[in-house]
Amino acid sequence: MRDRGFVTLLLALLALLVLPALALSHAERKTSFPDYTLGHVPANRTSGPSLVVCKKDSAKLTKRSWRGDKRYTRKMLRILKRCKYRDIQAAVDAAKNNYRILVFPGLYKEEPSRAVPVDDPKCASMKETSGTTPGGLGLPEEQREVPSYEYHRNCPNAQNLIAVVGDSNGDGRCDDKCNIEIEGQGRKPGDTIIQGDKKKLNLIRADRADGIAVDNLLLEYSDFNNLYALETNGFRFDRLISRYSREYGVLTFTSDNGLYRNIDASYSGDSGIYPGAGPEGHCQRYGIEITGVNSHDNNLGYSGTAGNGIYAHDNRFHDNGTGITTDSFVPNHPGMPQDCAKWENNEIYSNNKDLFNDEMDEYCKNTPYEQRDSKKVCSTFQNPVGTGILIAGGNANITAGNYIYDNWRQGVALLYVPAEVRGTTDPDKTYDTSFDNKFVNNKMGVRPDGTRDANGVDFWWDEEGGGNCWSGNSGPGGAAPTSNPSRLPDCPGGPFSPGNPAKTASVGTCATWDPQNNTDPPGCDWFTVPPEPK
Image 1 (cartoon, rainbow, N blue to C red):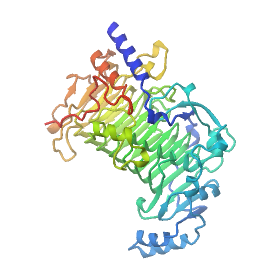
Image 2 (image 1 turned 180 degrees about the vertical axis):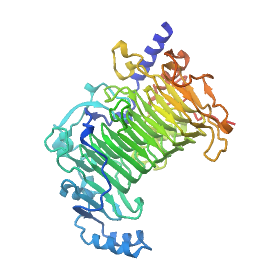
Image 3 (image 1 turned 135 degrees about the vertical axis):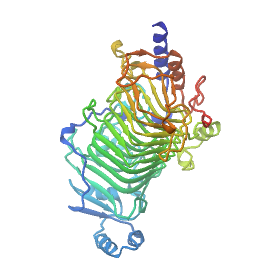
Image 4 (image 1 turned 60 degrees about the horizontal axis):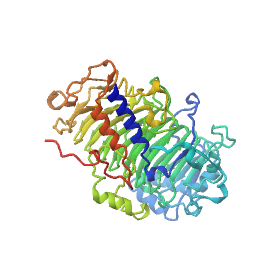
């Protein structure tokens, strides 16, 4: 017991020292979950009141987009004649509840929004004590002053290129600009582009904007999120391309009744998609569905601190540093500890992207975001390169029926995070992760066509927790998967295990990574790309 307690204290102290300078610039206000019984995923509407947004060249671009379909081209050009707005934010400002905003092909830089100061002095008094930092390890809340909800309501474009802010009376529920749909009118997402200036934190922010739908657009160049939903009850993000965000592509936080669908997410410093502070259902329901996503060339394909109640199926997470992570790291973060996500029928492969080498460390330290090559991803969070799925302090998650291959460190890793790391001092909660995680019927180290493509090791576990189980998983030709430890509990799971102190300590030193001051923590091998397995 002495060794176990020492390792717990060591890991807690090390992790609390982690202050990633980039992520910490975006602490968020205190938030709460909406009442999910009052919301639903918005349907795809084709009728109802609408406003039209266009650019001078939209007619030419519309004809090009719909070339070969004369009937639809004529229909779109008739709608285009109703265009009254050159900027999407202007149409949002004019919209009422249940409006559709039809955005015709073109490049939307939202110049009026860009002209608003990033820290607008007229709302300087509308700040409050922070709650946490979505997606990163946060400073204690009393140390941060952040924009309140009223700040975003009164100065919507200080931090956001386009803002849909839906609570007019401050009661936490949407009553103004609810059920807004922003939909590109091209044949494909790349025909209608929203381009940031690399200074505004968010390209599109939906804040208490229940029923928001964002569809058929390309989003690029945000300083935080390309698309962000906060305290929003009901959202649909569909047919999107998200790329070149400094941190996150598509992020949701304390939001519910949501759908991520048909999204191509790439070149983000943290993750392509981030369903964090997920719905509180405690395994009774899944409040957010993720399907048809192709997330690649990011630091992380998918991340979710307290990513609870998520059902992710039929997606591809590949060519990232790490494919999928979920965790219980962050102090003052809603929904802790993480629980009840399900990843099923996904392909998770080739997540070996080399983002932490010496050349990249120097480039990222010395090159401001505005000057970076768009395809040079500078990591804003620490993660074990070469990993398919990392569950860092999660409970009752299900990993089932996935193809997980060509991840050179490990296919799936499960590790313990002590409650002290997230600021919980109750001794009864010290060992409240990792429990009841199930890994069943996954194809490990083999492609869907049956070709062998090995992981470094298929399953890695630090041996802490109870009820965790592995059953029905197989490697090439039906062989047993590889694992560390060599024997894993079958389902329904075994008794509590105190963990392997050597494994836990190695994780602790990795938690001290910092992109400016500690890029190579002693004793940590997370940031070196492992050799390709033979």
